[in-house]
Length: 111
Image (cartoon, rainbow, N blue to C red; front, side):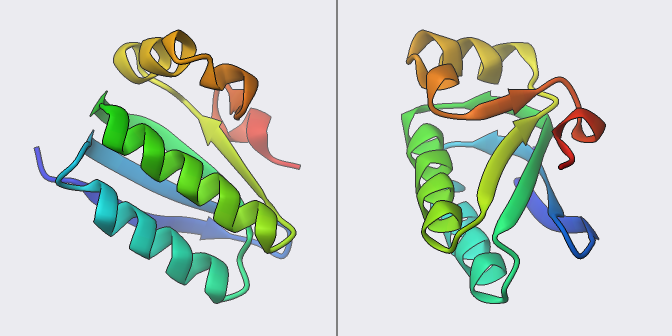
């Protein structure tokens, strides 16, 4: 499955970024680059819809942390929504559920 990242919905108060595929060492650089572009375009309040992420590894976790840092440094937020079993388990195992704001779905994550 190819990795895909795209902006789905942008309003005055937030942007939804949809990701799907595998967030791993091969796709993490693309993820970081795209999030940085979005934030530099003035959209620092991000909701990451992760329902399409079927696998995440340590490189993917690092990319998520990078996105969180980028958004926060720009005065925004970086919320995770709609996590599947494997990504949710890895995030919880690494205790990153204490770092990220995690929501059941995009509607719950909206400000």
